Amino acid sequence: MKILVCISNVPDTTTKIRFTDNNTAFDAAGVQWIINPWDELALTRALELKEASDTSIETITVINVGPQSTEPTIRKALAIGADDAVRVDAQAPDAYAVAANLAGYIKENPYDIIFCGIDSSDYNGSLVGGMLAEFLELPSVSSVSKLDIEGDTVKMNREIDGGSEVLTTPTPFVAIVQKGIALEPRIPSMRGIMMARKKPLNVVPPAVDEALTEFISYELPPSKAACKMVDAENVKELVDLLHNEAKVI
Amino acid sequence: MDFEFTEEQEMIRQAARDYAERELIKDVLERDEKAEMPTKHVQNLCDLGFFGLMVDPKWGGGGMDTMSYVLAMEELSKIDAATSVILSVHNSLVCYGIEKYGNDFQKEKYLRPLAAAEKIGAFLLSEPEAGSDATSQRTMGEDKGDHYLVNGTKNWITSANMGSVYLVTVQTHPDKKHHGINVLIVDKDTPGITLAPHEDKMGMRSSDTHSVMFTDVKVPKENRIGEDGFGFKFAMKALEAGRIGIAAQATGIAAGAMERAIQYSKERKAFGKLISEHQAIAFKLADMAVKVEASRNFVYKAAWLKDQGKPYGLASAMAKQFAADAAMEVTTEAVQVLGGYGYVKEYHVERLMREAKLTQIYEGTSEIQKIVISRAILK
Image (tube, rainbow over all chains, first blue to last red; front, side, top):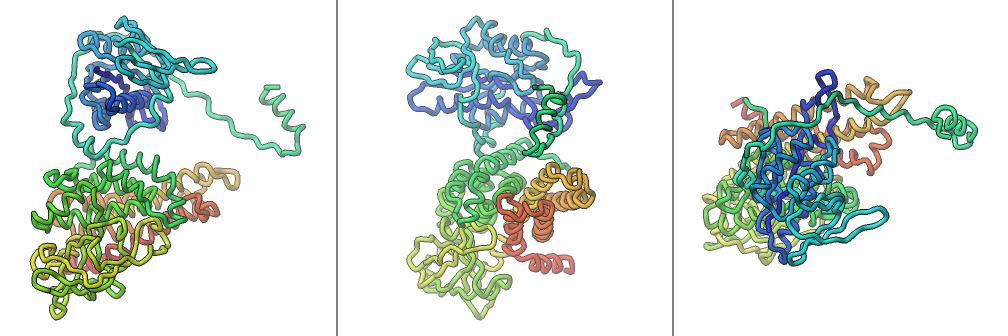
């Protein structure tokens, strides 16, 4: 069994977001880039499955759609333990371009389980996993919070309103994973870091070179209003503020 | 000149930072309070390859450079210097010393398990009456033909308990003074070695510190490093390397305290505005940032020289003196910025201040560094 983990290169989650070019582009100056946290957890689960003695996983490959500048992030995935990596040499302007380029590669190089994080922490589109499955004409399971391999069967838990659904699906398929899939990402070992450059990182040309989305402008959410303190005894003032200023009652 | 880190160095820094922020932080206050050894963390850091990371892969080490090592030391020390000192002694004193000056037999027998982190190393130089004046060693290593018979006491020994490979300085020829000193590799389980109880320290309380007593301990001659009488020179050379690690540790302690002071100053209000907007606090923070950055530059320069195979004794002494003194000043000011909160254990900076103090004392006090520096510049 071969596993593919799709990874997105995103700004560190503590990045202070700024825009340039009259608010039409993200300002990448000084930004630290990381593996999208959900994708990193997917990779963690894939590694756990490979290490479990009762599964027959041959390789774990990571794939990213992006320019050469994303390679440090890809090598971090190799340092953590992926066996090899693929970079589709293209910008990633929107979810369509990413999913279509992933599909282009996977059609030629099939995998049994394709992991995608539920969304990427930069644009939060939640689009790539579903689109990818459609392009590949494969089943997909969304919101997977637990995934085990029992013999030839893949058993998953899926979060639904008020509970959890247990299901199985034949391979190949796309697993769109979220919180719970693994506890926390792994810290690469020194050996893993030194090995990362020795593992294959294949750069392949893009299948498509277009985007279907045009970004008009970006804006930051309104800054949080200051907290107003009201004396515990002063109920009248509290009611007045809630009624006239916050207008919630 | 190139001030960029390599991708691997950045990854190692991040790995150390992640471990410190996810794991060390969880029980660092409790271990400090109870003076409890970080046994679990040392095991985890061994598994991740932080112990033995600079040793040549030929002996099973990580084959990384000194720059990678100082970045790891800095990040771990931001949260917990009591754990990082165990790493420093293992890597920059014990592994380095045996790799640089030991013979192949000693490397096979001792360096290999140290590089694989199956064993932890300790460096036994200080004595009740020989700290800064390391020449006046009282621990005797009587030459008995095929072995040395060791008697004496070593004090304030880091990793004395969890360590099992000891590098011990002994006086073999008292008439030759420091030319009569030898350094022996000693297995901790050799009969005649006893440990005093864990020292109750001001800071670094969770690091493993004991006095070690030697009573008629037989050490085979093949465990002597170098020629007869090489021990003092060995100790000085090992400390040159060790000081880079301690300077990196001091830099991390200072940077950790500074980060907490900056964060606090942007949350706490006084007289109607954030305290970071008061010049009295903003200037303190600026002074801290300058000291931390200068410490880093000293440390990275010393590490770079060592990696280039160039002499680094002067650079490491300067780095150690500056960074240790800066750590004391920065942590003291961080406590001041946090005020009442700073004096309370929960906010970490008072602990970092207690930890900083030791960096001015061990592996050569700040005053000893000034002797090393002045001798070098007056030569």
